[in-house]
Length: 336
Image (cartoon, rainbow, N blue to C red; front, top):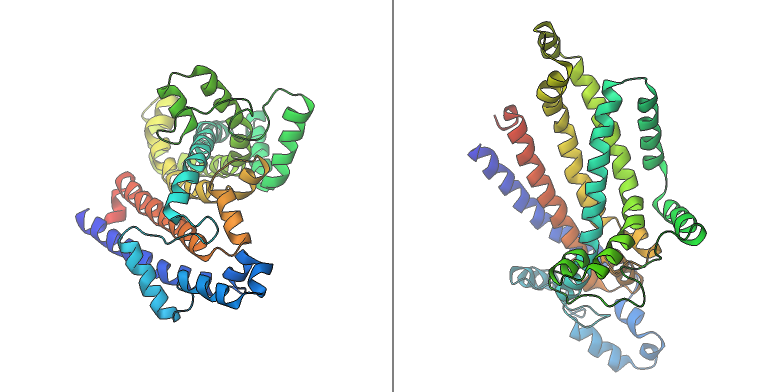
């Protein structure tokens, strides 16, 4: 196990270093001038001002020198200064990340709590009505475009039935609690502000459902297929021959093996939720990383784009590492 952990950690560090090079090259080779994109018409008539800004962000240096400055900054926890906000990129990300983290975590839990039991029941009662419902839910979740689903639920539950709150994390007249963690639910609980807690929870319902839909579909399909494959194994036939109860066979023998692919999928799915919430956050006016990413890309804010992309890459690498470790713990043959 120790050798397995060391090899995976070494591979993760190597991939992280490679990711910094790829991210830097792509961000700095995108067509367009980030300074002109920020300054607009003012820049066209003042070349000295443009040169001053270019030097301020080191854009007048050779590419290789800028890369080593970027790496040196990373070693000190510095992701650079955003051209748009003129604040440290890390400070901007710290401001926007809690909203995305809260939304992605609620969505992921929603997908797990519904998807895993639904997949299990669909497999155990194969070709029954509940199996057909599970496959329909899975198909709709996977095939529905996020932005389309977001507009549909807003039109029905907010605009039509008026039983759900509108976009945003809180009502316009509500006051947010003092920021401690940045997570609205936890901060309102810490402040014992129950009205804000209910308001924040209500605002999470629709965007969480929209963001969870695709993940729910994938988890349900994977869980069902994995359960069906495990049910047909010889050890299950042996367990039945010994006279074990069906519930004991499913929970004690089939489920542990069937969960392995779901664990692998779940890690990547959570990373996808954290990093792929751009459309959901845009439609629901959610002040998270998705909106920050969209704004940075639209204004060619190179330091912000590199910082966000690097954070995304690190999230994927960390999730992959944790998934590999979980996989090895569930199936000891993996680390041999």
